[in-house]
Picture 1 (cartoon, rainbow, N blue to C red):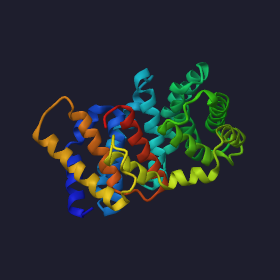
Picture 2: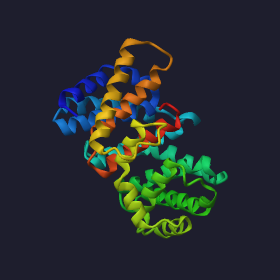
Picture 3: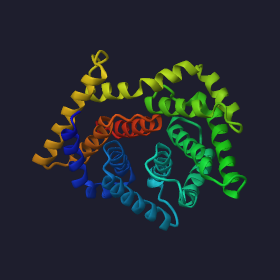
Picture 4: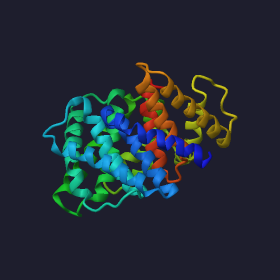
Length: 305
C-alpha cells in the first residue's frame, strides 16, 4: 500500500475521531491502535501524542466512576487489557501503570465473581477468557508479593478453574472463542499457578501445540481473506499482497460512501473503515495481531460486516 493512500486514510480517521468519542470504548480502541501503529511505523510522533490524549480521557472517565454499568463492564475490561497490550507492543512506557489499572481491577474482579456464580456455558465463555487474558497480563504490572498481586493471582486461579470445569459446554468451534482460548492456553500452559488447568483444557479439547502455532501464524492472512470475500467461499487462493490491494480498495470505497451519503448505517460503515485500516498497517508484533483479531471478531459479532 502506497504511503499516500495510507496517509489519506489516516487523515480521514483523524478528522472523524471526535465522532468516535461518542461510540464508547468499543469504537475507540481500534482508532487508538491505528494512530499508535501509524505513528510508530511512519515516525509521526504527533499521531501517538493525539492517541495518548484520547486514551487518557478514557482512563480519567473510568477512574472517576464509583461503579460500572452492566452494559459497559465488558468494554471497560477490554480497555484495561488493551492498555497493557499497547505497553507490551511498545507504544508507550509502563510508568504508573499499576496505579492506573487499579480502577480496571475492581471491575474485572467483580465480573469474575459474577461469572463464577453462573452456569459455564457459551454466553460466558468469551467474557471468562477476556478476564483470564486481563489477569494474566495484569500480573506483569504488580509489585511482587503485594496485596494487589495476591488478589490477582486468586482471581486468575478462579477463572482457570471455571474454564477447566466448564469447557465441555462451550462452543469451541466459534472463531472468537477458538482464537482467544488458543492464545490463552499457549501462554499459560507453563504458568506455575494455572498451567495444570491449561494442560487439562488442551487435553479435553484434543488440541496440540503445533495446531495452535499454525493457527497463530496464518491469522493475519485468514482475517484478510475473510474480510475481502465475506460471504464468498472461493477466497482461499488469494495471497497477502492481492488481499491487501483488495482491502485497500474496499476501505477507500467505504470512505467515499461516508463522504457522499448520510444514512443510519454510517456508524457501522465507520467501524468497518477503522478495522480495515488497522489491518492495512500489517502488524509485525504478535500481540498486535491478537489485539487486531479481537477488534475484527467484535466487528463480526456485532453484525457490522
